[in-house]
Length: 88
Image (tube, rainbow, N blue to C red):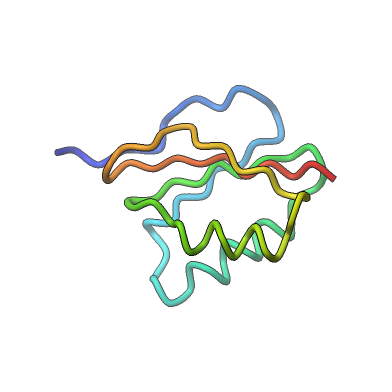
């Protein structure tokens, strides 16, 4: 099976790609939280990964609460794309 190339088109300005597959596992969560902290209201981070990061999603929900909305763009084994939208 060919890996997803994270090429799902961006449908709006203010959406920034983040491909977690290229980041060493021990740094991923810190990098993701840093990227989310850098976003302004109305901006989105399009996150690509090779697995469904359920523990990470729980941590994001606990830390950011309603400030970050989580929307799956693609949810297939080995091909996960999630939009993290900063709402306020």
